[in-house]
Length: 351
Image (tube, rainbow, N blue to C red; front, top):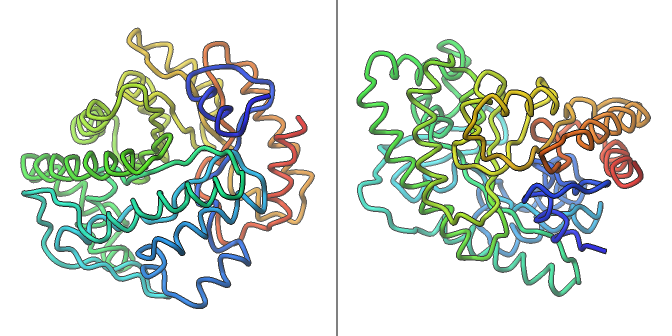
């Protein structure tokens, strides 16, 4: 019988298993009373920058739910603080970012070091508790990071149009400048992920939450080159997961982007994603991840959670060429109910 870690790595290589491994995005977070207890003691950024506490909250959902992978607790914006940007995460009012980005020479600072140290502590904690689960690292993709930088966080979105407008306008008006920013952020991301790999993660996930706001043409011009560059610089045998919210228009273009696993949001079925991948003759994707709508976890009805989870697992079993990792179609929300999370996991284990 495979351990949780072995099951995740096997599925990541495209192996088929009757019961898929399961973890989910933001699995350590505000929906958990145990996490909220720690957050009462420290602010969000303090938690991210404290390796011992970051490791502790990373292991919470593993002990509580018996998930197959632990993803290190951090934030996609944290590494920016090592490059002259000041981050603020107030309890209300949205994220604030200020300063001028400086990535001319990459040097690992205290923020990246904190995440890497947290990974090492997490691995030790898991070993001491005899929990054989995969440890996942992650980073924000350049386009998503650029959105937050250009918006100054999330504060300006409610005042001056939709979030993401500034990045798109700059791409159209100043394409050369935008591509230069994307290249700098790509270099930072490569080095950040390499540092996590050196710290001992078993796989990585790249998050591009805001790339789904682009047209297919703009995605190909401004986003796809950076994704290919990043993945090309990482170890070939390392499982590499790519998540894009709103992935549907770009799936065929991502088939040979260098990722080995595509994480699918809830708006696109696993079946449709697999069919779109097959239209690219250079397809290198070996597994799909996802894709329960996280809103379902807020319902007062665990039976619906079980039914919808079982539907996705059955669909995953029908994938002819791909492994399947059970996950949400986006991050779990603070409003998710713990009993629904348990139903989600139980339905996966029993299906």
